[in-house]
Image (cartoon, rainbow, N blue to C red; front, top):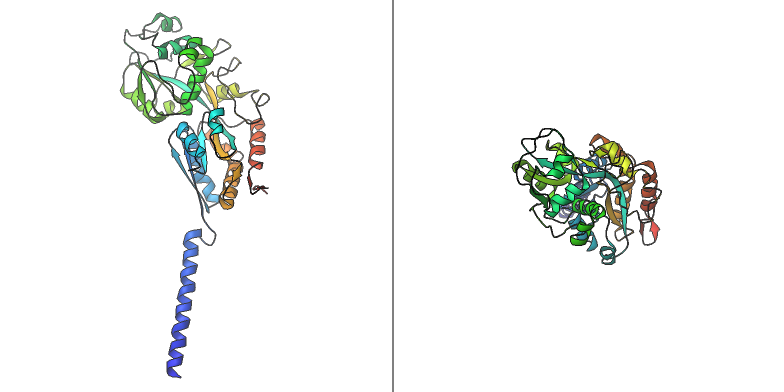
Length: 359
């Protein structure tokens, strides 16, 4: 009896330890009882600060959802969402028809915010804001305007003593939505650029030196006197670099700001295609900044993992509603109400095995 009692006691101890181990494992995996869902994203550098803020704030109300986003450029985001090596991608450039044909299912474009490409420069002798025409910007990147005291630059900057120094042109060396927006703008305003170079996330640049990412461009401009480059305007502001005022389609010189970017998007919702892929560069309007764009999150309409799909849909809904209040705080232009409604329709169309994921 004694041996039997000891054996039974040891058996119950083993059962208790096993139950305790399972309970601890559940707590560790689920952050207190529920399963943790981890989602991987990658892509555009421009919205990265906003997205990181969103992920941090959203995790406070939904601790079981973890998002990891790598800021590798829009081109990288498009490539990785195409091969489904990530759960969602980020891009300032809408996917092309050729890129869409290569995907493994229908990819939705969910607009998240508005941004702008600024023309930044490092001219030690110039403290005032430069004013640049579309023709001058195209001329600089074509190599036709090669010195800072070129008459074409002087004509729109009377009173400034422009130095007789060679312009060092800086461009993005990685595939990027910033490059797409900038080259698409140049293709609209310069037939020569459109014919010789065209628009894409990566192009063969006629002149200049390359730098990787918005961070690389701003770093290169800061350390290179007489350089000029294109960058998401927030990066220029954060690095205390000047940004030029650009002459828009109405003939007004406008610098990028929340109001001028929003003005460029005004009326875009009415002419928006069903898939939400749209260009707002060289937009009409006296107050519109001409090198503006939407930035998108790219997600598959048909999700392969139900838990991930539900978590992603819940986050997207939060982002285009509650999340938009952080956009303006961080100097991003938030979506206008008309675009929020269109984003809602896309989010509601995301499914798992034919059933909508947002209930």
